[in-house]
Amino acid sequence: MMAVLRSGGRVFVMLLISRMLENSLLSAEVKEGEILPPTIQKLMKGYNKYLRPFFDNGPVTVGMSLDIASIDTISEINMDYTATIFLRQRWTDERLVFEGNKSLSLDGRLVELLWVPDTFIVDSKKSFLHDITVENRLIRIFPNGTVLYALRITTTVACNMDLTKYPMDKQTCTLQLESWGYNINDVMFYWTRGNESVSGLDTLRLAQYTVEDHYTSASEAIYETGHYPKLIFHFELKRSILYFILETYVPSSLLVVLSWVSFWISQSSVPARICIGVTTVLTMTTLMMGARTSLPNANCFIKAIDVYLGICFSFIFGALIEYAVAHFCTLNHPDANIVMYGHQMGGFDEEMNGMVTTIAAENNRAKRRKEKAAVDEAALAATAELVLCPSSPTGSAKPEAPEEPPNRCLIVLVLLRKVLRKAANCCHVENPHLIDNYSRMTFPLSFVFVNLLYWTYYLYL
Image 1 (cartoon, rainbow, N blue to C red):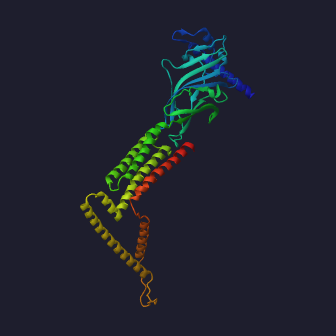
Image 2: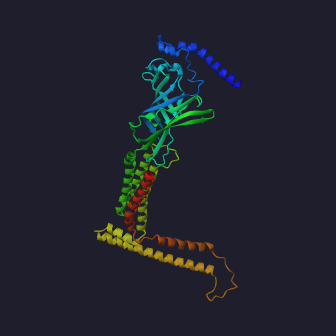
């Protein structure tokens, strides 16, 4: 009984809506003094666009196909892409069956008189329908009631990107189509020709990307209000790396090589080596800032290009630190000072002799300071031994003298000096000029090895 009442109520609602809107639909047939052709008038008579086809006979099936006209921009900052597409939808409306063997191509503005699917693009940020010179719509009705509805749309769609391997990355973006109000009990979506339902990508030319693969799929969107039909178009974009090699990788590598030039410059040429080191560091900093202008300022990705620029900056900064260490060792090495100044003053015997005499005097003073430091250390060591072992040389204790507490500060000072002296001996360089010789081999070999690891990881792993 309840089922009969529900069925009767549904039919009553249909008849009520049909009668309420019949007058308005008939009046809509006349626009701007023009009368619709008799065939269209016959089709529109009693037609209710507010009721979907097969209202009581199951869901209406809507076939979809796409033609990608262009992909205008792909933004890593906003993580979206802008595309112009031709969306074509096909369905059968039993109320539009007519006699004949030819289809009817109607003005796109007559779509207001027909029922059309409420299809929308899921991740669209903004979209618009082209309207120059008129709204870009196509309506075609076939004798068996099949309706072809085509639109030209430009839409900006969100695309979640993984920029970890940027600029050697691949991005997979989607275009999702859903029904807004009709669930799977009312409307069913399907791709008309499977993966071949989407065309236009084979002839598409993008600035930084190439389309490697694309395919279609169908699923259901589950919301609180029910299950809705969904069609998904997937396409994979591979970034072209040649631009970044010429723009970033080659200049940064050349800056690293330029920083190695200082290894062949004499350590006495302080302005030249400092100028090369500081200039390469500042230029590398500018290059790193320029490489990030086209990327999001705040994101959680450590990109491949950031890693490479960090490696190059480390090598350039290391070359500057190498000269600081070598120059410091040269100044604290007497023989190296004599050799260095001897080379600088070669050809001027009198000045060289005076310089050598001065350096010899400095060496004598340095030796006296070392001897004095050795005596002081021996005295401190003896004092520490007396503090730690306050016994007489014969081994007999002196009970009449009270034991004094050990001087802990003095003991710590002695031990600290010993440790620092051992550390200084370990870092002692016999010939500071060999530091540059070792760097001429160590830096290039290390840079080549790191590059092999870098490109192997990001290209093949």
